[in-house]
Image (cartoon, rainbow over all chains, first blue to last red; front, side):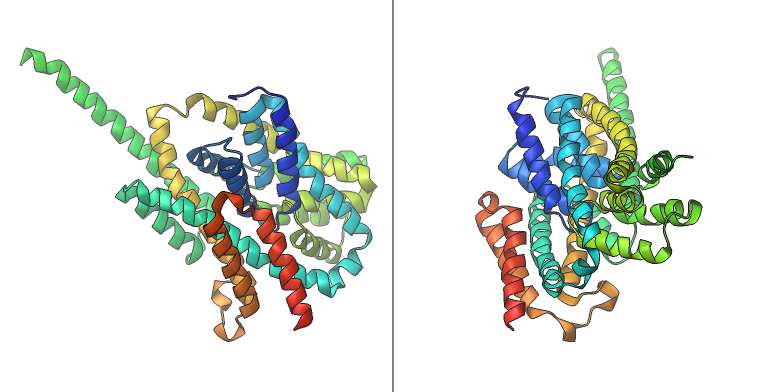
Length: 200
Length: 190
């Protein structure tokens, strides 16, 4: 919650509204769009922060875009920000579905709509892979063999072995906790060694 | 029990137990609406999934709105969606609070750093699934290069080129709707 300018509430609402209205497919689609918008265009969030938010939203119950809205809204303007972001995300699908409910036979059998929905997938794939390339480059730049290996293994597990996203996140969470514990104990050991040094 | 109350509590359960995105919510909604309460037939429910997948927006919001509208009009739609969102709101708000409070701690940093590569891989994997749907209309197991949709491949390659070349200046929405409009026109002409 760096800024407290009420104007950002309007930008927040508008951005969530547009993203939600234009998102076809699962939650990772909207996460890619959010990354492009909030990190690259608006510069509200850092890239690492967006990845952390994605991990949290993926491991919490409920619709992913709503979860992400709650956290980003909270970050920008506290609980009010969360509520505004949820409204922005929830209104477009509610309106669109309510309209489609009425015309739904015509909608389902319309040839132009079927073609448009199919070809738009090519654009969605381009956006997600563009975001992925940028993110993967940054992981490679860390030159940490462990993190690069985690990324490659997670990718193979998700694409080829069909391991569920939540399981992959839980396993990496466990690895992270082990690393943090090891780091903590080796630091304690070093400190103890340092304490002993003057007496040596 | 009043229908609206029943719907509200059914969708709270859907929101609370659907971990891992929209597709996890579908069997839960089916359980609540078709099996437990018998509010919809399985056929209606199948139509619902088709519509929820075809239209923009989160699948679980789409489904709760659809079920709500069908069973109790616009007010039902609002009640179902509220029920579906409520658990998310409380849980994510709590997690966000702790995340921003402790994320600068060394140990938390180490844990988050191990999670980030996984998230990148998962976003990439979602991209691959959608690319396969765009190019072959199938998943990985069903890929047949004889069925490649070259026009869609051209749209994808063009879109990716523009995004890589112009970075921040090229908005995602422009690319998605651009491919939608150009692709539809080309398919209708061919």
